[in-house]
Length: 108
Image 1 (cartoon, rainbow, N blue to C red):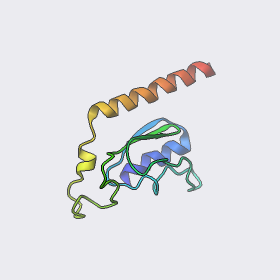
Image 2: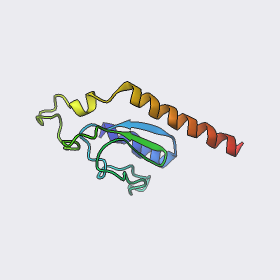
Image 3: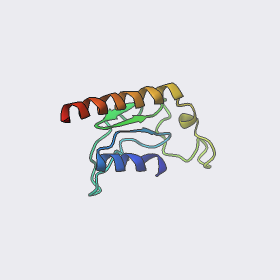
Image 4: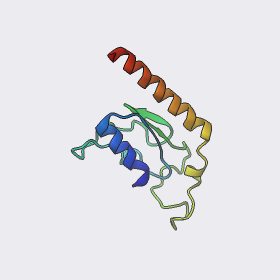
């Protein structure tokens, strides 16, 4: 799906990425590698977590993950995705950029 596609690309290329998951079942859709195998297993069933070069941001609500298309399964709205806070996303991006800069210093 659209929320997991970038994690599969990141697992294959090693590019750091922050992914926003709504009702997606993170354990089922953990990042795949180029051979279609789970490359980096999400350790938790919900909530924000890091797996390798990927940070998955997801609400820790009891109803998450439901795997539905919207709360009423009609494809309308997923509050669990809409309520992810901008500050949390920016903090996660900064964390990955910081780590990426450190990695480049050790190589060069």
